[in-house]
Image (cartoon, rainbow, N blue to C red; front, side, top):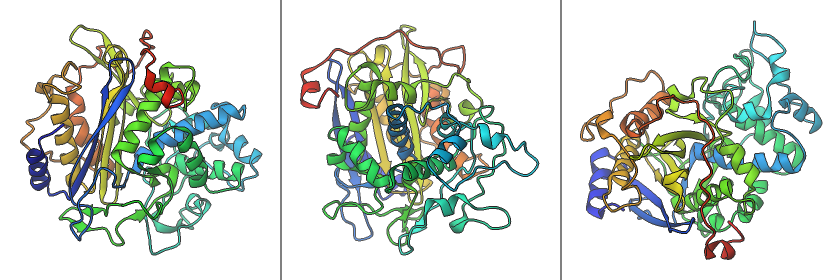
Length: 445
């Protein structure tokens, strides 16, 4: 982990209030332990940020929702290649997808459940926050906006502007539709459905992971801060659960990712093997633009990339970023190949800051990856491919989403040595971790 003085110095340098870190360290027998570290403050009253403090995990909600959905639909006998229109009709939903003006109407009938989660189907990049002083609207109201009658809180129209499966375009809207579909099928709020799923996943929910807008009373939640360390009014905004609304500790999310990584290799566990494979397998359609966006291919709700080790062999990593008002974060975990042979290794970094926290998260990630005695010491990285770490990232981006994604990509991800073949990822030879005694204690996870 980092020296405490160094971590405090980074917070001061970048003007960020607090940071929570969890590192997955392989245990040598195929599993991993979670180590935590935190620094800074959680709120304007200077309450310390603890490793049990919950922060908004923003878009890191999407991989969890996708994993749930992959298993949920499999259990129901519904293929991920089912048209969304058919699934909505079967759930008695009043929602009907539509193509944008001038676009082929049949697009709305052919987009699939998979494309809804791999960002090749629907639009609406951001899911906007709602002040906590307001009653959160039904998700259907957020999905029904048009140019003539906009949805509340600045939600963009969901009208389709691309042929399904032909082009990557990051979509929070797809996860709003997924939430609505699950709620129609289940007849209860998505957060309630997810609570049961998380409890089946082992210790993650106890360490701090919830899709409720308001956590249990005994949980401490951090306030979000804009740049200049101005607090978000009300402490934080509320977001749609599947797209960006979960609250979590870095430790809780890291432990959940540990379970997901193990499920990728093992036929039994708290997360189904088939669901893990669906989420962590790169799209057969190829890049379609996700590499330019994130430097990675797209699975189902999770980005995936390969890196070459010093011996030329390839390992595979899962990746996702997070950006809500006043919060930023990242997950990065090696789950397959030689670098995962002793168990998954990676980290979760959550910060209660805004764009300044893009620089902070990148700086913390670099230090974790460069630690000479840390879990990434043998990972092959070429830091000559990225800018000087002492020069803060200056955005050349034209939009907010590019600021967030290009920041980490240019400051950290470009150091990974990618296969010469490019972003199209092929199946790796299986390197199954061995089963440890920890699996028995955790129900096979």
